[in-house]
Length: 193
Length: 180
Image 1 (cartoon, rainbow over the protein chains, first blue to last red):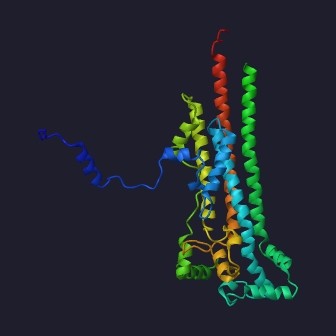
Image 2 (cartoon, rainbow over the protein chains, first blue to last red):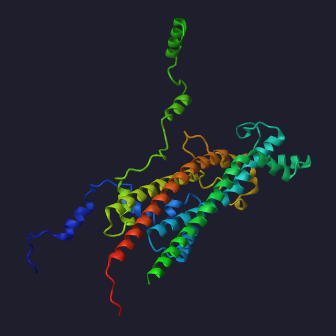
Image 3 (tube, chains in turn cyan, blue):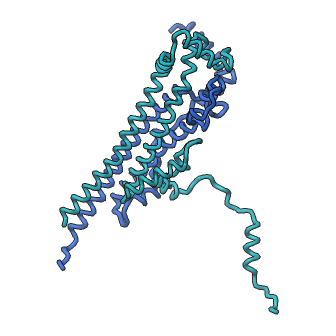
């Protein structure tokens, strides 16, 4: 049996430290170094909105990284741009048809001649499909409804189209920039040998 | 202006004591709120300095270090606009218009669905984000994004050029290695 000593017990100290409240307040801010690295690493947590598929994003990021094999920080920045542009394009491609569909009841209301702000007024719940059938019976078929929807929200859909065009150019441009850099580097190194 | 007119103006001005209704007060409380997207990030910002360290090669000259700080600053500015886009899209919420329409029952095509589609999730005090509102915000952000991206690309280009120039100069100054 060993004699009890006055030496401090490290395990007990650790336990005591664990029970003490942490003097450092929990910070939701990430450190500057982490923020700097975040620019170079595509992250689902910082890119996705509610309802978007993290697995789809991660597989896109993985595929792009494997294909690009970024060789320096600047190439990494371009790669992240590529991934973000492609992701936003996918988001908009999903969103636009749904926005169109969300705009259709406004067109129905317009064709029916009811109050434009009918979502807050007397257009009763459950009669939307009947209203559609009534419109169809009067010759206002789906194409008329689509045309009216487009007319009512033309400027919004134009903005979505413009954004998608910009994103496509930016996505393709990111890859072209990297290719140009790589070919320039190759030319310099071959001229030196 | 006549004295009578001036006196009337002063009297009338005293009548104006700002918004009276709660709605008006809430609106005017946001008068000074700006997005700050056009204000460049500080050069001494910690994230900028950490990013500049990643951008500049080891043992970089003072000139390259300065260019790296400038590039880092422009990268942070551009990312700030990207975050603004994310906040805008996040305002759409999960249910409203990012879900697959095929998964929605046909009965949802009524006004209840419309209300959830159009009146998107926003703080109670904020005005609901509509399709037109979203498009308008996208157009507005695009202006800042274009400028931020252009400045970032220019700064990165200058940095890359300077690094390549110094590397070339360093290699030409080195004595020729004996051929094996």
